[in-house]
Amino acid sequence: MQAEASTDMNLKTALLDVSQMAQADRLSVAAGISGVQLMHNAGRAVAHEILQRWSPRAVTVLCGPGNNGGDGFVVALQLLDAGWPVRLALLGERKDLAGEAAYHAAHWHGPVERVSHAALQGAELLVDALFGAGLTRPLHGPAFETLAAAAEKQIPIVAIDVPSGLMGNTGEVMGAVPAVLTVTFFRKKPGHLLLPGRVLCGELVVADIGTPTSVWTQVVPDTFENDPALWRTYLTEPLPGGNKYTRGHALVYGAYPMTGAARMAARAAARMGAGLTTIVVPEEALPVYAAALTSIMVQPMAGLPDLLRLLLDKRFTALLIGPGAGASENTLKAALAMLATGRATLLDADAITVFERDPALLDRAIVGPCVITPHEGEFDRVFDATGDKLTRARAAARRSGAVVVLKGADTVIAAPDGRAVINTNAPATLATAGAGDVLGGMVLGLLAQGMAPFPAASAAVWLHGAAATAFGPGLMAEDLPDALPAVLRSLFQ
Image: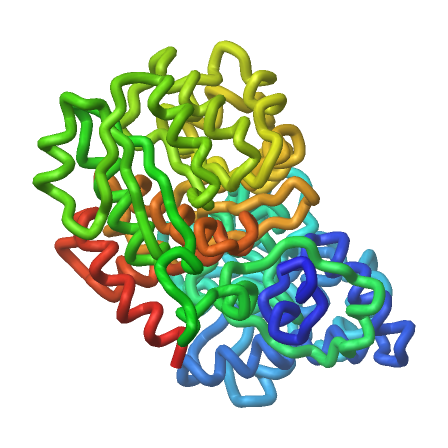
């Protein structure tokens, strides 16, 4: 993904934080597009989306004191020209508006009310043009009270850029209320995708306001929305002259008595295309695994020395430990042995928790390609990073040297070099026992085939969500591997 970071396809999935978007606006002006024109284009785009969805009705436009408010004046003018009955309310004084906002406000010749409950009287639609993504403090006073009243009255709200009070970089909600439609410009921001902000945006539309492509020479994105455009070219199809060994050999550490998690992970690795998958299990568990698995090879081990001997076999191309393993000293020793090989290794579940007492040991042990797939609880046991989810995942990846997959409905995949991907296609049905184990196996299957950790993790997370969506209601974790072939087929067509 690093080599393709500047391709047009990847730029379509790029996310820009607040400062990057401001830079893009400045570069647009420098390229000859005036700020007045950019604001006009933004307001016109919002009005267009409104006119596409609603018939004329009483609308109130709430305008803030900055550029977001200027966009609101343009929306009000556009809707008025379209024959809509429009009321406009301003937070602050009209004389205090400056720059492009003042320019467009001067073209509004109707009444300007104060932002208050009274401005909602009779409104059937509300345009929230109070504050954009750059707001850094909680909503308060008339802005907060008026939006809260609109939400209580169930007046549909159209938000410009973000619902006011939603932090554009983090998705943090600081007084925002739900919108039915959010129209942002040029590119999405992380806050549009991270929870809880994502659920407040409603339908999200990205409008073209004329930002020239030349801005990409100076605006360099490092955050992306997960999409096959990022990693599709890294997926390998079986070659006509290949064989099972050329497709990689995945090794899964199986546990006892909790056998289901590792078995699901092994099946997922095989479904993802690993040519061979072996699961190494305690001797007493051999009958359970052998009876339940057919195409997966089962290798018994009496203890750690047997695992160490097995790891001497260079034909194993990727390793997984954690699902069902138990947070024991044996798991810690086995994880350290796998990491010490320098081969692609995935740590999940208990194989993360075992480093709780000495997180620095994990950092020292990672000497080769590594992916760590914690949920929030496991993450907090090993990493002391603070802040929003994107910031924490990045800090953990930078500290450990591993690709960190911080799981959830808004899974973040972060690389040690600062790149990050936010996933958005996970359906609620993935909130089921074992789904994370299957995800680990999917990443393993791609690593085994030689895919680099960051694209492998990003691809597996997206495919995981796509398989769950394809299956639909009633999903159990063991259904996911069998739903993969159809999803993969669609990508290879």
